[in-house]
Image (tube, rainbow, N blue to C red; front, top):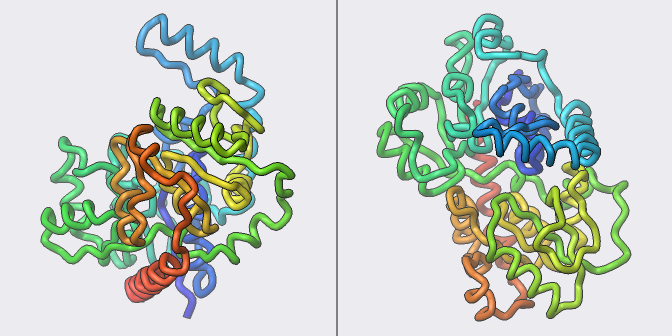
Amino acid sequence: MKKKIGIVTFHNAHNYGAVLQVLALQDLLSKKNDVKIINFKNKAIDDVYKIFRVNRKNIFTICRSLLADLIYYNKDKKRYINFNNFINNKLNLTEEYKDENQIKNNPPELDLYITGSDQVWNYSIAKNIDIYTLKFGKKSIKRISYAASIGEDTLYKDYIEEYKNNISKLDAISVREKSAQTYIQKLINKEIALTLDPTLLIKKEEWDKYIIDIKEKNEKYIFAYIVEENEEFYKILNYLSKITGYKIIHTGRRNNNINSILENAYTKGPLDFISLIKHAEYVVATSFHATVFSILYHKKFWIIPHVKTGSRVTSLLETLGIKDRAINSFDEFKTKKFDKSIDYEKVDKILDEERDKSKKWLENAIG
């Protein structure tokens, strides 16, 4: 019998990983269930991706950010439209909930709520605890987390007790990083499963169906994706471009610090992101989901882990036996064989095993 399932996550974030992971979970669960994305419009998330994002720290930052928003208005608007089109056309959304009170007063009538994946328990991003720990709706509704992330090493210190109380009441709990698994398990003394990010539950052949109409580039290139400014990233990227002769496609708002550009892909939508990785010769990134799709499409890639949230990348690479693809400096990169291949036959075998474990856990948790 099909269950009615609602997923709570950062589905409205104009971030490639955020929207692709919820598409993946929706895709997987929809094979046997009726699945909806609970359309909670988190203002904290929306504000990050507004076309005008004025920094109000002081008069200097206000003027500087306003000027930048005016200069890049056309690009920002195009990117904004492309993400909204993806969200509205690819995700099966419930009615819109504009704030926490609306969803608590009129919760979706479903059989099961799922929170995750993404950093739904990272308060510095979510700015909300109750919704992302599923503290709404009838008590009879089953509640689980799937590959939820706290992003950092610990829960936000001012709200540890609140998180502890809410998470402990979930019917089944899984997280995305080993560090989070160990930490939360000690905190609530309850079994915590370690599961794969939803994007890894979908094989590349299934992702290919989403990008079948996107044209491949005629020229070989390096795909670059940075989510945290890092001087070492640019040194590595430009060096790799110089020694290979390949130009760079990147998704930055500006072209600063990149020497040989084939294309600025800042305005591209989420499915273009997958296609650009699929057809790249190399990928250089600081992003977890750029790592995921590089692995799925058997790319030669180098990852500079995010300073604060890099544990999810290193955890994944360690699980798959390729932790040497993570580097922290240009000097370290120069000690590596830049074109070193990855034994993807071995990686795929481990990934298939982990994928089966995660799917089995999810199926059992849903019941």
